[in-house]
Length: 173
Ligand SMILES: Cc1cc2nc3c(=O)[nH]c(=O)nc-3n(C[C@H](O)[C@H](O)[C@H](O)COP(=O)(O)O)c2cc1C
Image (cartoon, rainbow, N blue to C red; front, side, top):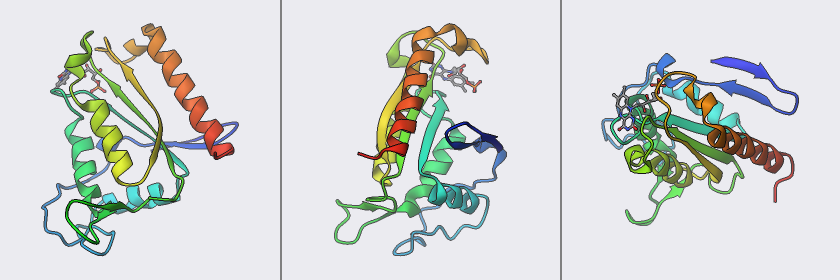
């Protein structure tokens, strides 16, 4: 985790690979509690999410979807939804909190189909746990680290998404 002081917001960058997050076992131990019973680094990430006003969820594409690190994190966030009345309706821990989110995905190929569901998965997940997704950004044609710098449209889109997030955090609608 790298804490950064920004002129207008305090930003923390988190790399899921730095955290020990075990797989969800589907034990249903989180039923009625909003808390996962597996004790590992997941709890510290949720504490950060609890305290954040906004979050950017980003993943490269591995086999048409998010990385296994991101998928494990998302699976463990099963504890952030509850099914009070029926299994076909759920509520998210952050519903009504006004927490904002931007989602972002990267892939190597130039055709969007090769990104698979990376971006839609992140966006659907964010909505399910009660985050309000204000923008989603995709960057195609990015193989090597840093190659996104050549993708001017993606960089512009990412900057716009960041500015929109910041504006909405400062003046919620
Ligand atoms: C295991 C693996 C699977 C990948 N699958 C895809 C894919 O399905 N579609 C695609 O366009 N790129 C795919 N890529 C390329 C990565 O999305 C791309 O290189 C990305 O920039 C890697 O980011 P990273 O260096 O942060 O891991 C794959 C790369 C790896 C290592």
